Length: 276
Length: 291
Image (cartoon, rainbow over all chains, first blue to last red; front, side, top):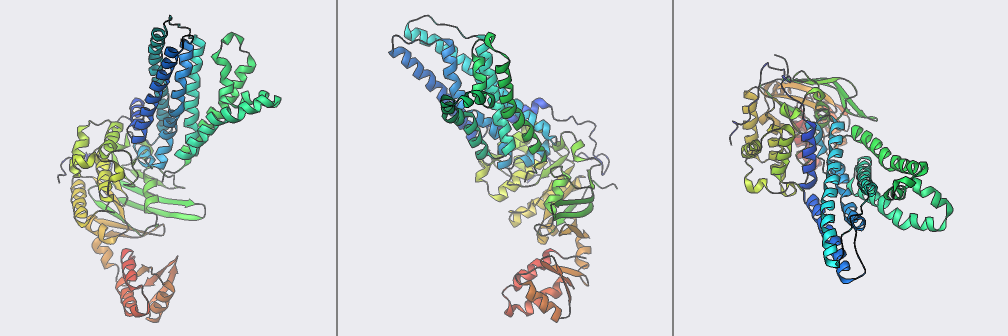
């Protein structure tokens, strides 16, 4: 075995000259964090399954258009259809980027190669945002193709009726949910616990509990839009001219509860928890 | 010569539990310094405090004159291996090194060099870490620590899981590294591992430094000094040692004996028929001889 490749650059014995060393550029940290999301089997399968779901959702829509003469798709429908596969599995990336450092114990390496943990966390959050934006961009391209294909199959003219407000709301809520997943991951620092907590709060409660409560109780109709991101963000998908202070307030309160507080508490947790 | 690693008055308490109690020592450039002590003595906690993963209650650590947090791109100056098993089980060995090289800003050719250095061939390097043996993980960890061509190496139990040939290889590697001016601090709970690899030793027991010096000084110092011993039946050992005229004091769960480890071993062996644990006595007393 050769040892010729390791060659300590000793200048003064006992002193390390750090004047010529640059700290790790933030962009490099983000690049590495993006790579870490997809270089494992779980990362690969999450991406692969999301791709399959996108293709399935598009295929089924086309099939319905082709088989029913009186059904047509417009850009708004497609955006709603394609958002579902994007929000189903991808938040797991946002959770795992934090939690796997603790469950796989790689934090020992990550925090010794970049000792500033806030930098590590913000690079991870940036990678999560880039992943969210990248997948949305992919969905937009796919949606445009789907819109044209639907028009061709159904024999009608494609309708490009996607309002800017709806597009902004779609992107913004997607980002909010990704950041919520990231925050919950940082608070819990355990992959299964964070995934369970995220899907209960983001998917099961609005779907199974809140809807039922709101159908039966007046107080639930008053309260739930303040404490649930889905109900709080719903009005923003429509025209923004009807929005009042109440809707904006509801979105702010729900965002503080599920995004800001988890991010703050989670950052504190990551700063103070010793990786073992 | 200024020491490369300087640890001063480093205590760490977890609630009432004292993990490290006021530890001070230095490691010199050009030397391999062994950090020896039984499991739970505070070696890992001390090393974690050196690289900023655990905050000490007070005291200071400097490496090459700097606080770890002040060193930019620390992987280029200090190679760290705290736990060879702390790698994502789903990544390949090569990917683990590639990620490290990316953070440090090194070309991918450096990854190939390091894989060759630790003798992980292509087939092995492309396996997932989940399927690595402990020895392979240690090699990968050492390759990772050496990636950035650092001036200092801090290795926690790097020989754990290596076979005798692997330990000889590591000795050659670290000696060569130290001869070119690098400083190495490596921990172990096994005296025979450390004495093969290290030029000098720091012995830690129950959160305190109990001895330091090179191998000869330490071995010579055993005669007429006290020894820390542990066994399956400390009550019985205590009684037998007292009966044979050696001063014995409880030291935590173990015993501190006024006498050499040989003397303790002799008493243990003589009473072997009345206790099933004579072999563990001899072994335990050897790993932690003290001044």
